[in-house]
Amino acid sequence: MRHGRRVALSAALTLVLVSLMLLTAGPAASADTHFLSLPFHHAARMRIQQGFYWTGCCHAAYHGGIDYIEGTRDESATWKSFPIYAAADGEACAQVASTQQGCIGGVGNRVLIVHKVGGRIFRTYYGHLRTIVPEIPRGDNTVFVRRGQLLGYAGHSGDPCCVIHLHFQFFDGWKTVDPYGIYGRRDAYPDPAGTNGIRNGSPSFWLDDPPGSGHQAIDHGPRRTPRPTPKLPRATPRATPRPTPHPTPKAPRPTPRPTPRPTPRPTPKPTHRPRPSPSPRPTAAALPVPDRASVLAIEQLVVSILVALVRSL
Image: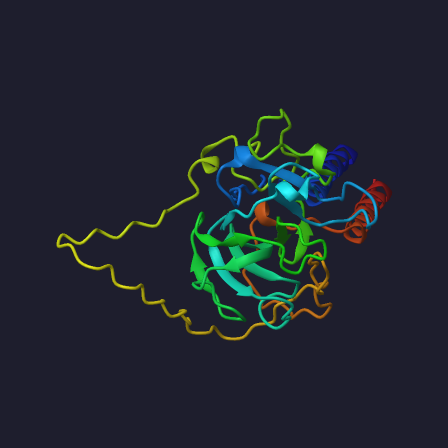
């Protein structure tokens, strides 16, 4: 009889320990999500002027984005405007000057693209543009753009220093993160051409490691096809400006917006969140990681079971 109780106690203990390990371990860490291309061509001519944290004095350490230039670092007189391209497919909108209404606040001319990747929402922000192509709607309306599609040209709109550059910012949802996974100053980053021997950090969201070392440094997507030349010689007619498309607005939905600052930062997510609708019980591979309170409760349950089993011997 006592032998049977010992066998039962051993089996129960094994079952409890296995259950506890499964609960505390949670699902395996997901791999990095790689989907971004550099938002410009000719990476060999580009430089990183500022990293996620500022290099230099006279301002707070936090920057929150990556500043790209075409020219010599720290010599703004050499910086030139360059075309800006979408870093990935997504829904794009734009706003100009210091207007805060629309899809995103900020300063200067700016474009925001929402990317849906693997069931997650990411956003890329392109700031201080000189001009924005008319195909990108201003305000709350959006239009779908492809990776490598022209968005506008780098400038200094809204920048108090009046220096030409692209402020590129990346959001996971509405949380600002470093797309390189480095969270450092500019010298900690791989150069845009990928030739300085520095690799990405973790997690990284670029297609290549380092960015610029692969196909996106050469081919960023479709190019504009030139119109055929007429066979009969005739005067070239003046180009009629194309009207700005106005896609059908989608149903309104709450979208958190960053507080306008010289460098755009997102407004914290709203504290009130709608309760999710009931869904089917997830499989073991999709179980969420329990919090510390749940783990402590499970540990207390295990101890209680063991004490009860020992007393019954």
